[in-house]
Image (cartoon, rainbow, N blue to C red):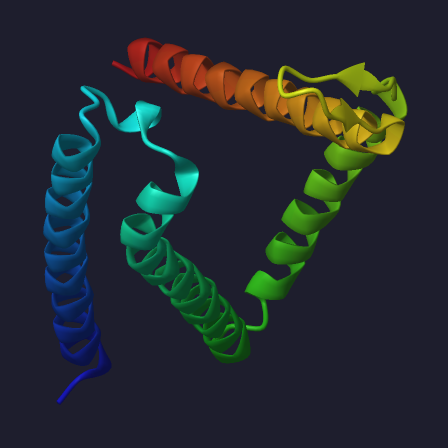
Amino acid sequence: MKISKILSYIVLGVGVLGAILWYVMSSTISDLMAENGVSEARELPLELAESSVTPLYSLTLVIFIITIIATLIAVFSTLAKNPSGLKNTAIGIIAFAVIVILGFVLADGVETPMKDGDVLSASGSKWVGTGLYAFYVLAAVAVGLMFLSGIKKLIGK
């Protein structure tokens, strides 16, 4: 049996498990809301809602880890089969690192009070700013490349 077929069955199984856990979670939360006389789930005490959300959160975490591992395996196996692609991969990684470093340099780190009374540290604030700057640059590059591609298609016709 091919690996893609095995992965398809695994994805199907995880999807079914997720649907079952979602049903259990939503019915449990509905029961908790009825028992406590509240009309919205956000009005429930955290301790009560937490027990029904934890299994779905755990499944999400497992799927996330499996996805990362599968992605890394696919990337490294492709690079092992085609070493010439290593140059392009290195260029992409270096470009991404330059964008993140640029975002880090541009970001300000200021202690920020949050709504719940906690304080976001200056370091945390700087990393949030870094992520935003990197996102803006990458989004601008993506939009620019899509625009350029559209223009090339119009000119080519």
